[in-house]
Image (tube, rainbow, N blue to C red; front, side):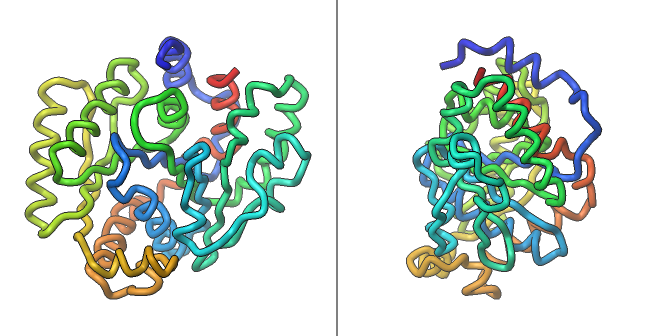
Length: 286
């Protein structure tokens, strides 16, 4: 599973040989499932879009993605159709709430290994049309495996989702331990989900940060916390993102604050862009 450590380290260090693209690639992941990661991704995308950005959600949870379900949309195609059926990338994108776009990974990422050099170049050329996006949010699978570490390697910014539960914190720490061990990233941001109060969120982060500072060489940044809101559960059941169905809910206000912190620096023009992202993914999965 982790036998490509040297390649991961090399790709994390190397600078892209192309001019920097517009889109900022943000990988959002977690140490375990059930922490609300995908729900956060979808609602962060919606709020960033409301702030005047163009946002694409790339559901990179291979075979287990559910961002489409949370948005209440049903994609006919995924990235497999771009790779294997020669479809245009824009024809594969689905439009979600508030105008955000969704690119479903499906099983397409697994097909990357089968492409020859010319097929890869054609695919990369198709990605040029995604350069208009300001943000590409990658929703990975949970846990530690090759694909998750690859998507962390390729991104401009890493966000780890955890909850105050000890098992969630332990698994989030294990994920960062692997990132640190293979020298993939030296910085990460943290969102604490399912908190009962603002104080519980900050206390959870400080305890987590203390352990990371003591044992790992990773600098953490606290983006904020999200309340354990019953409105969130209602929104999931109705397949309407809570920031749309309940824009004044506690959870929606938290997402708005986190999005302002995330996008307030106006640094989206410093990303590697979609072409740079997949070029690195090709190198890892080849």
